Figure 1: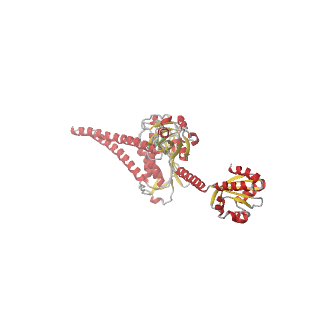
Figure 2: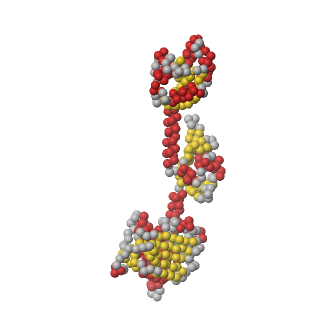
Length: 496
Ligand code: ADP
């Protein structure tokens, strides 16, 4: 506007002394630099600000060629832009950083009646603040992006998203654009973990911070995601207020605690199963010891050996349980040691099969010795793996009697398959059953006892032998557990 105003005045009487002097006085008062050049780049006029920018007195430079006076500007942005305006007479407006004056300028160059008018506004301070703010925001965004928790900052009053990170999308498995407004909460399903009460849209932590200025220190929420999966999130939220104390924004930190919840659930389940597993033998021992006491008191020795055997069976069970628990803690502390030697895998499988036959009359264990195999390993530990796999095959196939074992050599590995035709395992659990305390929890199958440590221990034993333990299974059709052991050649005289 300023330029236009002067442009029109200059057009009709630039050289009128009266107007010239009043114009000069006026232009001198302007806080921005103005310079007027003729067609040959000679300086016709410049104001005080330009005097300062050039660090030269007006009287010394008026009439001189600008580019000869300031050769360091030739070829630079101001020079290039001025040349364009002089050629096409079209006004140009731009911001630039001058490495000659070491400053940012906002510039307008216009052409009028053979004269070029350059208007230069020093915007260095504001530009530096702007750039610093921009850099600061980029820096802040990259920190927020790296954070291992979901972060979202929303603006009052509607809750439009200002800042958010990828972790948030991961937690909700929803693109953040779909959770960009508080109204979106209407479509969300979330429950307070402490009382299982469903959240109404304006009860979510961030909504409360935004609408009522509430600071939410940490609320555990069970979220049913749009894809139906469940996640547990601990949300903290807080309002952001301006100097007048009005809420202008809200920030929420979402911490996914699904895994922690799952571990807690598994531990609770383990404690209840372990107490149950321990209680049964202890109660049995207690009952038989009381019966035995009475029998002995009345000198009735007839059934005493039976009672003692029953008690001893239960003690063996207890010992097994305690050993399993000790093994789990040994594995955790990487303290499970192997006592390796050469032994016949076929003989070991037969021994284990025979022992199991004694305790289970219903199931039939059919062993196929396809190859005769000598392995180098811890015989007792491999025996434990076989017992675990066979006991599971029996436990999880209560109505189908046949269990098959195949022993063969494949690619320099001993391969043992334990096959049952029992309840099988759903695909989603197959990769997880080797984890510590993992049990398939199905209301229908709830009756199967167990602690969820057998396969974990077996997997670790086989892994320590540099072998593998895997499963193939079809729900309702049965399971095949396969373990492999590397074959190491040795003279047969060393075999035990
Ligand atoms: P558990 O003491 O629960 O049997 P395991 O570690 O031996 O613990 O097995 C883990 C889970 O794997 C079991 O809870 C069960 O759901 C599943 N599983 C193991 N073996 C079989 C099998 N042969 N058939 C079906 N499911 C099995």
